[in-house]
Image (cartoon, rainbow, N blue to C red; front, side):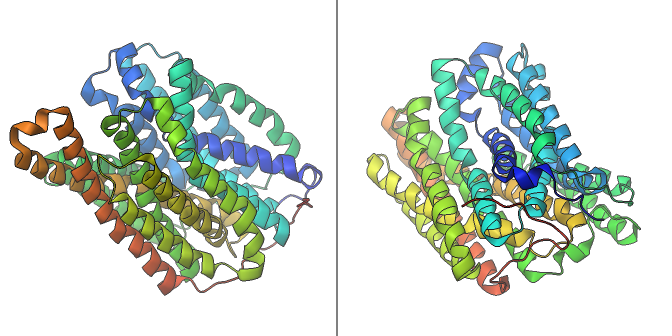
Length: 489
């Protein structure tokens, strides 16, 4: 496959970058934007306690399950076309969700949002990889894109808090519709289309991997809620493994595989996927536990909680856009993929020391430390994931990186959620009747959180091991045959 010659994107590099990055931020934001609004959603729509988690889970299931399929459709049918289709689905689903009048309507809308995001996110990164190939422009583009990916979760907490406190939880969904409309208006004017591949869509592979990934994310979610030993968790994870094994067998026999396994032949690319998996587990766990820590232990409002997290995305953006993207052409990839995980380990250690009496300042120091670590990591990870990939497989390479982030977050919440549950149970038993008091509840939560972050130290250490063992590339090259627009620094 060859890409179409550059036209509008060459003259509008900055606007093209803005369109891609706004779309990425919109998709990442929605993974967390409703988290702080859940109490309001429950009261407004009369959600049951059990079904309320599906407001978050429905998005994750569709997004994680369809990522590989969504990325591959861009390679086969044109990246700009599929990017616009994904954004359109996402925007319409957001509008429907904002008008939801029942549990079912909102959950279905959130699943549709996830499906649109699963198409838009990998095609956005693929468009970035094949549009910006001149070294300075490429570093700037990947720096901004990685900043959106890494900081979107924290910004989602802030935006959700602001909209919930000052307007309504519905605006956390409504806001995507006008933004999506602007992206759809600009996309055909500033982004070039790629030619579709002659290959056919591997439908059996698409069905098996979508079902397998969705079931895996669901099983991991149930593990966090019900425990690893529950029948539901065991059966669901067994089905997921069977479906994913079937996918591997299908791909080995397919003439037009959805995921050619040669994509993993490059050790650096495989290392990037693993590092993303481990770091995402730590990052999503941080958002999940610390948002509750500030509200449940310190009594902060949703808005106050979102503002409390604000220094973290600001730090990620500063490191990604101002520092890392300028230094990568001089220092290369490897130093940042060593320093980043080390700082993440230090942040997890710092989080594990927080208790009910801790002030905001140690919390602030910890999230700044994590922000610097993630800012050092996400730009080189994003660049390495698509380094040297043929243009007709950039969508797949991009989807695998997004899959690592999504599945890593799900695994992290499941594993650390289980650690948290056991630790809180043990602490409650130690406190006895005092566990029912406000101080006792805070004590119990803190004990669980500390153990969860102690486990997170191990996972972030695995990211460092993967970096040291697998990352050998220090300079990155654009996809073969791609052309680059000029872009002012």
